[in-house]
Length: 178
Image 1 (cartoon, one colour):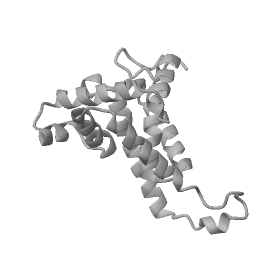
Image 2 (cartoon, helix red, strand yellow):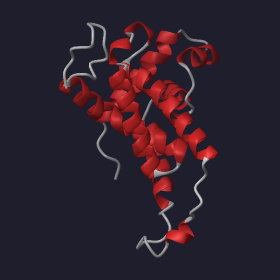
Image 3 (cartoon, helix red, strand yellow):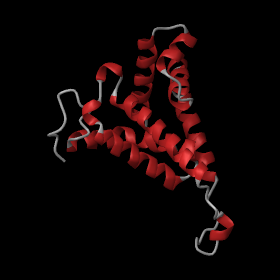
Image 4 (cartoon, helix red, strand yellow):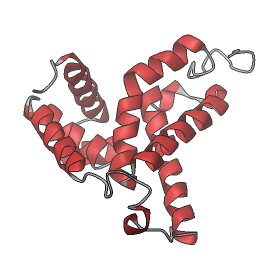
């Protein structure tokens, strides 16, 4: 990858190191949010790939004054998910899981995975201080804007951003949940 079309303010997705950093820090969050919205692992992976592709194409348009690369990626992903949902609404899938039972050895998907993911998120959130937990729930899980959450909490926007930042940083440093 070459960064010949990017400028000094780009998101650095046009470089190997920049893309590797985003994959290491944000891919899991992007996939989790897409999975939560779409309910399908394949569609979620498609949404993450499309998000990264759109971000890579628009790398030079990134404006750090409007937010972090993560915030920018989440906004792009929200648009990707909307596009996928709209496309599926126009052309709904005609084949159900019962039709595929002969082709898929395990038959139906394991819905316990969703339950386990939810319990894992609950356990991780429980490890955060209340102000950070509340900010993460509103901004990330409920997909609300920082400004809107700040107004609801009666604090400056920067305070909400700081709470989310430190919450995510501390979650990355936690040992794995047993």
